[in-house]
Image (cartoon, rainbow, N blue to C red; front, side, top):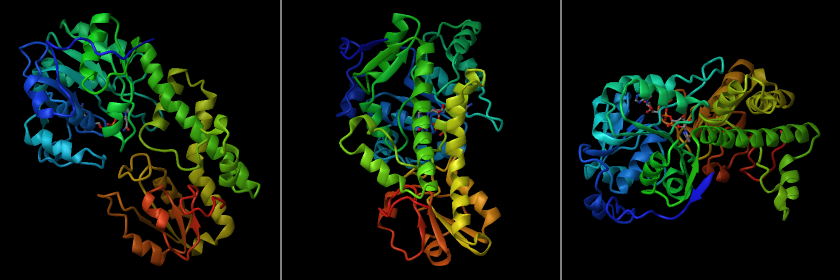
Length: 429
Ligand SMILES: NC(=O)c1ccc[n+]([C@@H]2O[C@H](COP(=O)([O-])OP(=O)(O)OC[C@H]3O[C@@H](n4cnc5c(N)ncnc54)[C@H](O)[C@@H]3O)[C@@H](O)[C@H]2O)c1
């Protein structure tokens, strides 16, 4: 690994700065005159692709967003952010208004850009199998438009070996295209801070390709970390899996304490107090969303399903809704009780419901309880949700499913199951 934090001499190439995008737009020159766009992002209207496109356009680059989702493409071209992302809405509007950011469903836009960034989703299937072909297949649609001289940047979280697979695919096309793997490491909702604040991993086989990748990401950060592609593929997976295992440890501790009639949060805050070695013990809560679970399963599959820690973490984290319901059953006559779930997003202050454990909780309770009412102040487009006032009025017991900050000021006389300790009343159930 090598870390570079010096800017190379870019005086003849790029002088874009984030603080003055208009001036930057005027001074940016492209690597090769035959490209009219600097960047195209395949999957560019998604949760990772769009913030990246917005940030690069704000740095003065001309960016196309290629995406198969026509409805989202229309919203982006209308200057509308299709999901919550703090600080992105105004920059999106500016990029669109000034013509530096254009979304399209037409794969031919790929031919126009010097840099082709691929950031489509890489989910596991219903049987928890990853699909190493997801990215090569997405690229197949674009293959006729891949052009000599381009830099192809893989940015999705991939099954190890996918960079090499794409290198072979590109070579088989007989085109002179460089390939780099530069994984995205932002957390949703914090993209417009973290894209600039986090070091960028740039992984390529040759110094020349590495420098091309660095040059692109130096529009966002001076902190670059160089790795080989296989190292970087593992680095990204290890990062997410480590986080998932930490959450599982906290959740298992929570269940142990709770079964012992002890409040885990009192134990946790005491053991962390002025004790740095334990400072990273997270609180209990639903560990869900589109990344941590599936990346743990990607790593497990990669290791021939021999990944006891990862599988155990999955059982613990995915088991938390079941555990909570089993505890509810002890306290309440569930068949005669209506349960309200507050917070359906997979994490706090987010509108993203992908792989949210609140929906798993809902499904279990639909089977066990008299009724379930769900609300979320951030989530739109789910007509099964009802207003929060209705949940507060009609439910007999409440469960906080996502730690939205608004719930800290929740006032209710109903019992509240709050594994997050948002209300400060402890986490025992
Ligand atoms: N969401 C996160 O916080 C996060 C953070 C870091 C890394 N990642 C990784 O980034 C990748 C993308 O995640 P995401 O959350 O942005 O997913 P997403 O589903 O929000 O976005 C993917 C986009 O790709 C589009 N798409 C799908 N197939 C396509 C194709 N063949 N051609 C063009 N567009 C296509 C979809 O319409 C969608 O807009 C995943 O590998 C994920 O693990 C996600």
